[in-house]
Figure 1 (cartoon, rainbow, N blue to C red):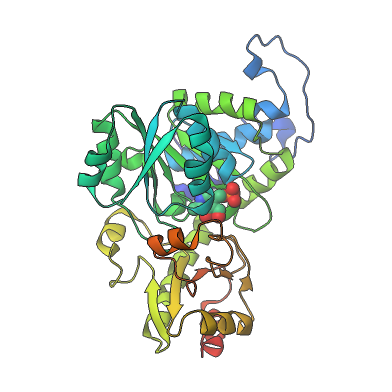
Figure 2: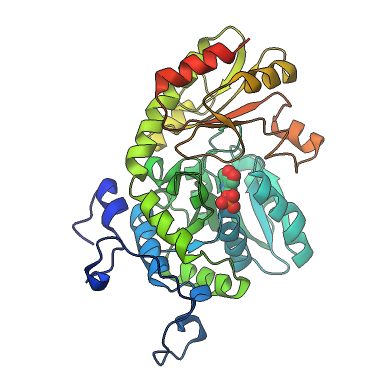
Length: 383
Ligand code: PLP
């Protein structure tokens, strides 16, 4: 689509059927399970909602590929459906994968608990240690799995180095780009084979559906689509309609969240009871230089600790009036949570300690509320 050059145009226009279906400017909800059979000879082409080929799927697949700058993309029922299906597509019994050692909890569960049941082994490595990557490489290593910004500590691994290392050693490189969103970073631009997104978060942006996506070359995405057809993690057409609506404002939302989060991180980092702020936009962040070089914005996510740890953190959360204390992120409503109690509670205390997730750590997803209102709410709630 030569005329859809810039991200703001792509999020609105890419993927819209041409000609439009009955002239509809907005792609309607195709609330039908099945379609008249048109002589298709490949099972995967039969027009049927679980086979990921409804107009609601097609518009999203094309739009997300355009935004990510990849040949193709496939939407799924959740971020975890996209992640687990992609991993099961590129790995088979007897294979080994390298993965960064601070994985999102759900992915950590798939890599460390589910994949071993299929005879797939792993080694968790620092995202910043090429010597360790080389040391842990085995003849059966097939995949390197990374995240652009880690959850909840907002570390940024050496993503360009990981993509290069994977290329040099014939590994398929996958990256979860959920925290950055394709507005701030498009991993295909540094050579990742498969980009994964939880559409539940920034892509949709309204805290009202679950979705996921994988983007990459046409061949690998077709293989993921075929696996998804079998495993069944298909996006429902109604959620697909909502996701398409949410995507249209992705660029303006994320740019606002970038600005708001930076101001909030600066406020928190100067506050006397805040002992640590993890936000890649702060000059004090260990990966600030890398984030500045590779990201168009530092994102709307941060985490922080209060002096005194757990008890003051719990009191602070109870006193807030704007952010909801809830899991998830990336939506218009600000959400705040203590990961050790919720989203990372499936990790053992030892695993959390090893990953640097203290019991008092607070993760904050900045929404679209007024930045001054958020700062004053935080200021009132802090001890
Ligand atoms: N990746 C990251 C970084 C996440 O934070 C999450 C969910 O919190 C997921 C993937 C999984 O997404 P979903 O809940 O849509 O399955």
